[in-house]
Image 1: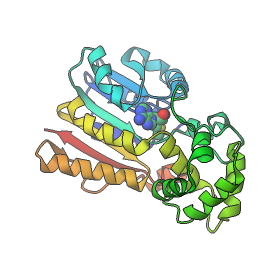
Image 2: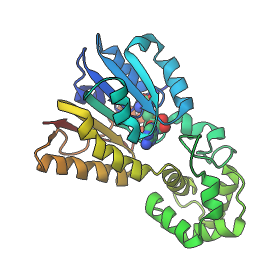
Image 3: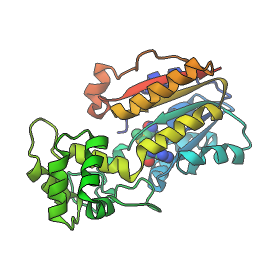
Length: 286
Ligand SMILES: C[S@@+](CC[C@H](N)C(=O)[O-])C[C@H]1O[C@@H](n2cnc3c(N)ncnc32)[C@H](O)[C@@H]1O
């Protein structure tokens, strides 16, 4: 069962109109895409994701509304071309549910999980770019420590980087999880590998850089009166969203609809524990 995060809140803040055109920048498994499509009559969802497998799953999950959804595979920077290809100048709303999907996070062959063995890949787009194996095996120790510290907010980054360098070549997800667990044993409920894996995943996919691009593009993709809704799971991402939204507000280009981020209800967290760190912010273009 797939539960799109803060579904009701996201759809309400997008203010979906039956004839509107909406960009789901991060279609994932199609959860939010389907919810938007279900509210449309003559409207359209442009459903984008950089992960080809996810698009395949999203297509199956949203088959009921296939006529109202056009899927595209691409990173955020391709969104302007996608709109142009559709012959659309601006959309009525844009949703971004950042990070990785349940499918990506749990499928061992994608290499994001430390709970099952798999190749150290972690690329959302498997057609291009550096893998997590490349990063752990070829990055200099100091740079690796900085990466784990900055992106994973892991205080034991130096110790972990040293252990990784000593254990090279790191061959698989469980091999890496074992090296990290020995270097920095568990001190709380988190698996010792959590922050290191998160940092690597963010670096492999340049998630901070991609978010910067999206935040630059979003105001140019959405028409006046249209909404931008962003859901983030990491404090560094929420900070970027907050700052960009505030800046757009100050410049008079948009109205911030969420003074504070909206967080999932206790019921949602109970049903879907991985939603617990989600923060939603929304903006209306002027
Ligand atoms: C949290 S999931 C989205 C889940 C989706 N809202 C749902 O309900 O099924 C995030 C998705 O965004 C995609 N993604 C992340 N960064 C991206 C980027 N820069 N460009 C395109 N897609 C991206 C990932 O591949 C992943 O499938």
